[in-house]
Image (spheres, rainbow over the protein chains, first blue to last red):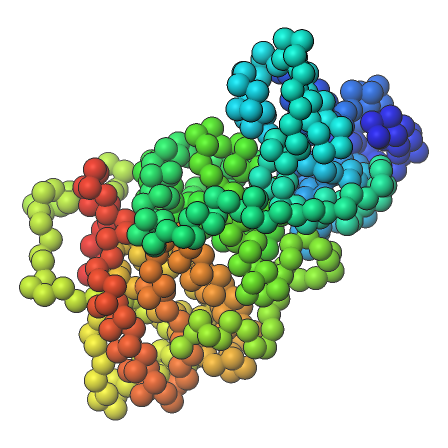
Length: 316
Length: 168
């Protein structure tokens, strides 16, 4: 797959079909990758595809000029479709190089299972549904379902639906909502006061670094409401009240755009379970308005579309 | 002096307890569409219909103007509930404003319920300019609902003191 990606990208650059490419290259730390944006054909050999390509690269699309080739997993391609729906990106300006994705590996889960820090692990290899971790010459095997990110386990669209080049055979989706929404279910079981208390505790840790916002392809406002000073909706001080308002409104802003790629939660330096908010938003859009994100690039966005009769039971 | 203004213009209350009402009464913030619900409220007034004085009204050009942020901000400011009221579906002055408001309010209400805010605090209604009786009914019912769930203490914090400004 990697070889094919490199040759396809090289050909696209040489033929002048794209001005630059957005992909992944090996990161400076073990088992990581980092985004690579380049127009240089020589850099193309750095492009990689492995089970650690966690980033949603479509976040760079709005800031990149010219015709762009982009490496996209299932969730990323839906983010791109959603950007096209919002007129943020023109379809003819992107060449989507689709990767059928069977999930990316959560290193924290691997560390927990192997009982070792990621620096002490020698190798992590994925073969189908098995992940083999080598620690000090010893091989340990884990089922993929135990080490993939929660959002990957509930993924309904592992294969990009919108692409120009698909690098491999489509992957059959095997969403397991129960595992993927474990945290959400435990929240739903709580009485409302306890839920509010839970979020209050979580957001007391927030340092308002805005990593969640900056990493999110759906957060493309040129001026975020938190930075407004007239009127000042939220204080810049990281008080939990303002942190909570920020995140709740952010979730509402990304409703119908969030593809549950899980980037916000990964980016969070204080491990706030942000996906438990955004995932619920995806569920609500589907339950209330039968809206699945990033499926149809011609469809109007969630809050622009309407049916003549819907959600009337919520209104007096 | 009960308050001072610091150099960056933020109002500081200096240790003065705001007047406490003898008996707690819910405070409801109403965003009413100027083409229908606002006129409906007006009609309720001119026809001397009685309804609770709990509601404070903000006139908006359309229910579609109401941003979910307004709702949350009102709750943070200490209002016990928010009512968004607009034209009946099909009657919007701008054709589609209330349809869009409906999607936004439905999602906001359900989502805030998931976050832990009582659903009674976020209310919406369709009230036309002639429905003074419906308006009084809605305000009465919503106020009763708020009396049941009690005062809004969502944003108060025992560690940092009162995180809310008091809604007047």
